[in-house]
Image (cartoon, rainbow, N blue to C red; front, side, top):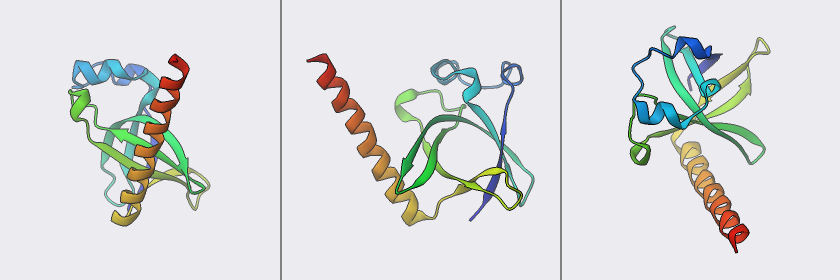
Length: 121
């Protein structure tokens, strides 16, 4: 399991990035995060598209800002945990947990969609 330190990217630091225009416009400026692999020190930029709770655990949905097509975005699920130093970190999921979390998120989206349809009636 890989731990990542979460660092929020100030909005003026991503203005000149190589993000595709379509994805960049979908999210607020404060949705951008930089994850640092604690083993290699390598940084990865993502957009935190959503957060949710499943079975008492808090998760986030990350998307790669370089993916320009909203319909074909890859979703990455990570779990929020408190690290040894008391800092909040994101932890990668094992395959079986990733499957369960993905399915739970799909159900959550369906429920939200159903609620929206009910309000329109």
